[in-house]
Length: 114
Length: 113
Image (tube, rainbow over all chains, first blue to last red):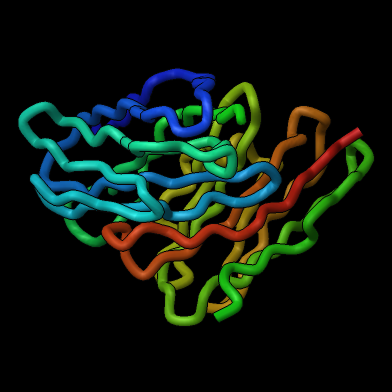
């Protein structure tokens, strides 16, 4: 079945460092891919998404490209800020169409130090 | 739009008591999901509904858990009787399509003592 694997944390970076959080997936069909962010004490928020191969999702300086050939959707940001400290979840739609649930990775905790 | 609204935000109860968590999805969303989050197990899907009908409840841990969606604007998750191992943050989310992603509520932090 469909599954998501993301790099384990925690990840600790200094402010203005480059961020990569790896995410790979296994899927049948053509799922959509997502990154969610969870700030302390809050629910998950959609950060960005991509619905087909080679699409790039971007938001708030974060970006990720849907790579079908490597089944990856790595999250990147060129210069992180302390306010980016949160847990990041990679996810894919469970089915190829519009139905069904999202499958989430285990989350990667990011801490950014000033 | 007020987003997905969950209540209560925090619940502390004694073992053996009944607990009811509530969720109001975003108007027009026809999917509703209940998740549980713990440090040990991460984010777990408990059950989801489509057009008020339960589609997949395979994540519900045991018969002590039940969920209902009597109409498009309201859902409940009930635990009876509650146990300390049920302590977690419970999230409700709604969606118009999995391809568009979900909108999550702020969660209910449940502590069973």
